[in-house]
Image 1 (cartoon, one colour):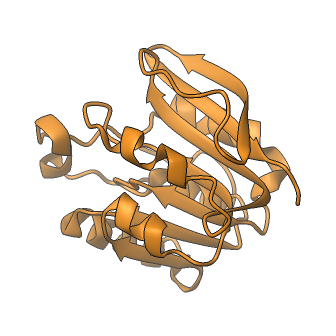
Image 2 (cartoon, one colour; image 1 turned 90 degrees about the vertical axis):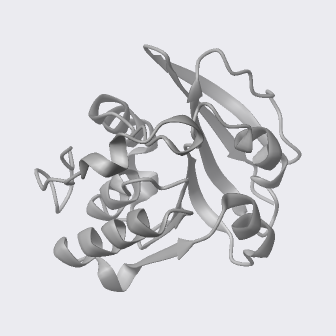
Length: 189
């Protein structure tokens, strides 16, 4: 996988077979290059200087892409220790370490304990898990998503999400094969 834009454009995110070949709930399904390019085309200049959360980070490719495209800070939340180490190694290799933070924790615990809101949140849970159902109501809380913030959820097209969360409203859905990106915006206070 390659970073498609910004200061690290063309740099490779190396995946180890062990990370990809797991089956079931822990299966790693990295966001495709096509979907990542579309995501950052959708976000455009909002990325510059933002505080970005890559939830269920996996390989960290989305958060690294955000950093490459000018994000001020990226937080990666991933429950797998080996994947967190991979993300940390890549952040050092790409020269992003001082503006990235990796947290080895499950998404629900992280969201419950977070106190500094993000400008952009990207959520990509395993398609076969029920984790998105458990956390969707937490994603637009004041301690998680900043006023005016953008939330993008990657999910299987067969999975239905609400049009409105407590404080954020779905503005658009984008379809890429079996993958959907649902974009929510939280109004300014």
